Amino acid sequence: MTGHQMAGIYRIEGDWTLIEIKLSETNQLFNSMDPSPFRERDLDPDAAAYIMDALRELHGHAKVKLVVYFPGPHEAGLGVMIHESIRNYFSYRERAARFAVRQKLRLGRSSLLVGLVFLALCSVLRLLLPGQDVSAKTLGEGLLIVGWVAMWKPLEILLYEWWPLLADARLDARATALHVEVREG
Image 1: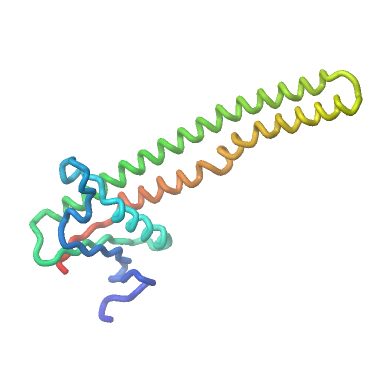
Image 2 (image 1 turned 45 degrees about the vertical axis):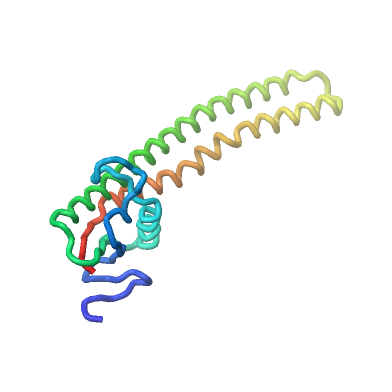
């Protein structure tokens, strides 16, 4: 191939790895149910998912370009309008994902506070149990277990649940910065 190599299913042109989309009309790229002006319209869910999946697969590639093909000549300025639309769409998604991260961490912190108070209450109740008989020991162990179980969700949130949201925000940021080119083809 002259000037073109293949990286898996993605073509390489010079330093660029290409994500390619072939369309017969502009509306295929955008959500047909969105009444917003062209530059502010949502991408078609399938087109957005395809771009995001491609970026996930190309995570190690520094220079990625989205190439949109239209049959025959296209109107002047179409490339700029499509680039702006894609940038606006993914920029909004990035802001929404970063907000979701902040919300998740806020929930995690408040849940942790509630869980710690509950655990402390269970521990105090455990110390106040009278006697050393089997029923008091069983109840005491039950309070200890319930107290720690109350910590499960806050710790899950703070240790694990926010990472995928941050990864989505970073991927959306990468999509926002995509170089977009419109070609005839």
